[in-house]
Image 1 (tube, rainbow, N blue to C red):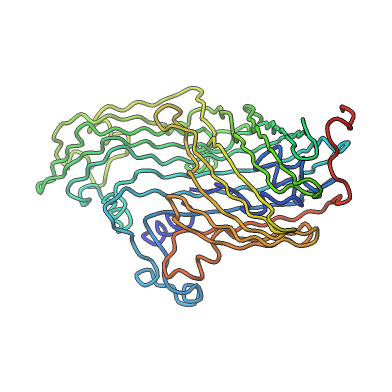
Image 2 (spheres, rainbow, N blue to C red; image 1 turned 180 degrees about the vertical axis):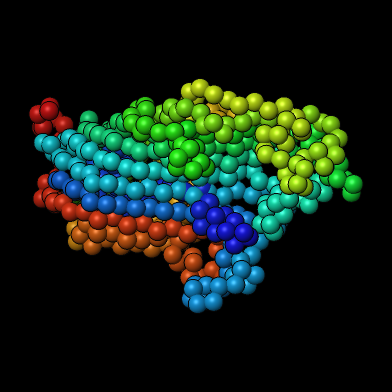
Amino acid sequence: MRKVFLVILVLTTNIAFGQSFQGLNFSTFDALTAQSYNPALGVGGHMKWQVGIIGVDVTAENDYLYMKGKIKDWTNNFDQDTHVGENLNGEDKDMRFGTTANAPSFMLRIKEKNTIGFFIKARGNLSVNGIDEDLATSLYNQQFDLLDWVEYVQDGKSSIGFTSWGEIGASYGRNVFSNEKHSLDVGVNVKLLTDGIVGKIDIEDVNFTVTADSIVNVHDSKFQFYGSNSFDALIDDEENTQDVNFGIKSVGFDFGVVYAYTIPGKASPFLKAGLSVNDIGKLKYEASKYSRTFVGNGLNIPGQFLLDGNGDYKNLDSILDILGTRTNPTGTFKNTLPTVLNVFADIQPVKNFYVAVAGQINLLSQKKDNPSSNMPTLLSITPRYETKIFGAYLPMSYNKYGGFNMGAGFRVGQFSLGSNNFLTSLMKKQFKSINLWMSIGFGKSDMSKKRKSSETVEEN
């Protein structure tokens, strides 16, 4: 059981999707990836048209458990005590896992100043925030029995949330101003959101004691779990699961703007700077039959009251009713998408060589927006080399989950492969995150045209 928990904690903990496809998302030769990051970025790129076949980005990272030793030793003779360590610094623990899967998609440039596109995606995001170190240690060391748990645990507010959904979307980008030096592009992605699986656990003021004679008191501990009815299929046997009708549930948006400065006489911009707000919207879902809220009653309860006649624990609802007040939420709920603000500056100091500095800022408040999952605030610097046929990327990033990471990636035509932390994994004796991204497609670039000024181009 401990190894199962380890695998879940290390390998499936908050999907940065953070900045997905880091490095490739600024490429002027991959409009589909660029438009996902900022809907206006495709307008100023080199692609005349592009078809994406498949793309995947997966990230897992945490600030509690870390892997150590050489990768070949894990595969040949993995030993948990040797190859896994705990970061015990007295601070709360955060974890995250994210993934993006791109289905077939396309983009098309129209009369030079406009781009349109269509895309289909499946996305998932798991975030774990504010887990007390003693609680995390107890779980990791398989202390799952309430009466054998740490003698006293006190915590502020912790949350564990998972959101998955599908997107069927259209994108539009347009150059709204351009002259010899300056240009301004705007863009929008409109996304029809399909339902997936939503689950959120909030734990607040965890404060319970278990005395030597097995007297339990949970004081005023609070927790709530809200899940979608599609979550039930993961718990129930197939014959006991009600049919879940997947379909379009709501609409989401991404908005972006990009400014570019070109040195007179040069064919491509020296500087691009932009911002975008991504994943604006809410998912609607029917509550899972397992949704619960609970507030402790502060009473001293003999431990045997929690056991049945055979000495086994009673079912969860019975235990909650003994220890406090339980409710079963029903009806329709809304869940805020993990909305972020992305800002970047991308310079080209010499031909074909670029350096992008970018920041991702989490716009959601756990108290006000109550998202089921959220994205980390992140800073990245990515040098890259780009030509029509080949691209090479060296992404470097920092966030509170995985710390500092350095990766590498490449593009040959429309095939791309990379990792945000590949080099870190090789260089560090201890590391806490894993990332891999890949994209396959085909398209046609147009290197011959330089955007004309807005005074000489007819309005489209």
